[in-house]
Length: 56
Image (cartoon, rainbow, N blue to C red; front, side):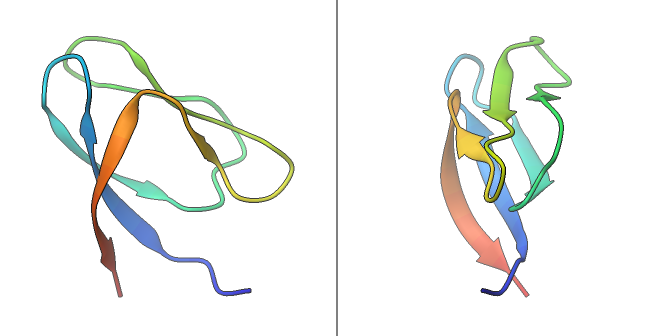
């Protein structure tokens, strides 16, 4: 399985953040502090964000 970077939008404040699709730690929004992703032993679970685009 390929891993890539994702541009996501925070559901709380709308800020855009680039994350790694296989993040191994919790990723928080740099603007409002909301949790965007949680590690799941493989691909990161997107809990507080929506994917805008997959980056190459």
